[in-house]
Length: 252
Image (cartoon, rainbow, N blue to C red; front, side, top):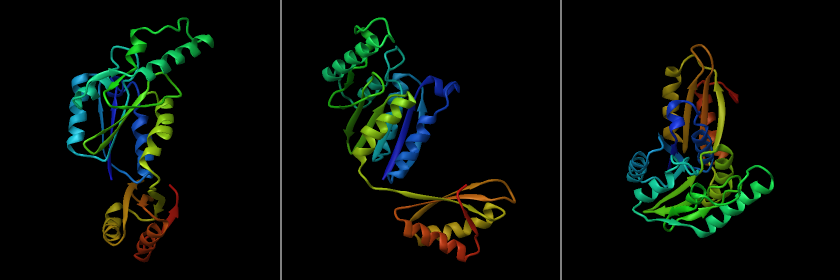
């Protein structure tokens, strides 16, 4: 099953913010058994986001996770862009509006803000693509959204890492089921990748695994990650490479 990730924000493109969200999402999707085929980043622009979403949907991944641009300011336009990309109306979610109102009331009572009332920026966060299922945000104000569109399961999440991670764990991953994709990190004692390459190719042909290599420099170890659906299959691939003279140490 293929997946793609779309992260949104001008700050990601200028380098003012490191895109740690896509790395976290990719890691968790991989553990769930999804092959993350592509990660895309665009700025806070409706047309750019629409174009990116439509290009991703044309590749027909099983899952698309979008992160960023759900806040109350003028440049938080992700939900609107997703609605337009899917040809859906952009509608007010009344339960979302109620939750947002409660959230700001709680902040006011804790002395964190000086005004609990809804304004246009706060109300804006309650709009979702028509037919979307709201995803609960327990760490912040803006809800996420879950949409099934022509066989693609689309999840729209906030960009704040704390909020995104919590929602990914509570709202996204449970919807993807319990299928696990295991991985084993190894250090291969071999001088360079060119000597390891034919052994990896043969292992990929013989076993139901994926293998990623990460050189640490000539004359040093080469990092290997073996991905598979079972410990047995991973162990068989490892044993096969050992039979061909590759010595391994566990971990990186």
